[in-house]
Length: 244
Length: 38
Image (cartoon, rainbow over the protein chains, first blue to last red):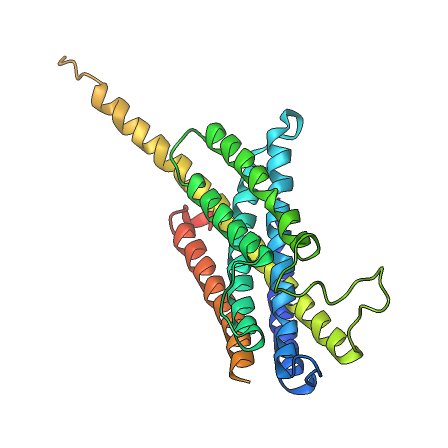
């Protein structure tokens, strides 16, 4: 699994260009709404980072399943799962922070233990635990297998988090757009802002995932070589020099 | 508007810092490879 350099460069440049466009649109072009005033401008960043956190954890779950199935088992799936989980944790952390920044002026509190916020915080903690588990020393296969199982358990929180606003009464609002409910929509300016945010942060996510995966592969190779060197040194210690 | 600026600043700032960290880790690890494989 490799990506050509021109593609990663295009992803990076695209992310920068769209991030600039999204920031200009969100901060200066898009107007305030009647319900939330200027705070509705946070729509450009908050829903995209939340969705991309799900995407990151979803990729981790998919790669974990592919690792657990004997027919598709390859070390690359485990490495992809680890890389995607770390990028997902960054986006999940940003979801909590930007949500808190949005909540303070609109709800009057930085934090409240409502179902959506609690499920999101739990998701963040579960995947932090997953990343910690990846650092626990073990043989390559044992570590990969237990991490894959842990990732699948952690992913059970994703639907709970997503549907929390429908299943329980929460301070957090429900989704702003529902394709199945035509009355639930945004005006054109906010739709454009949201789309720009999704494209900019989506490209940034893809760029980060590609680079983080390369780092994961290099780390795995470094670990393998360090282990072989340690084994060689240990064997050399055990050799007895026989005088001729 | 200060909350809005903070939201944008935190998002793009944190992602930029994380991107730099990932690149730095990659560069440090590539230095351990033989010169023809870098």
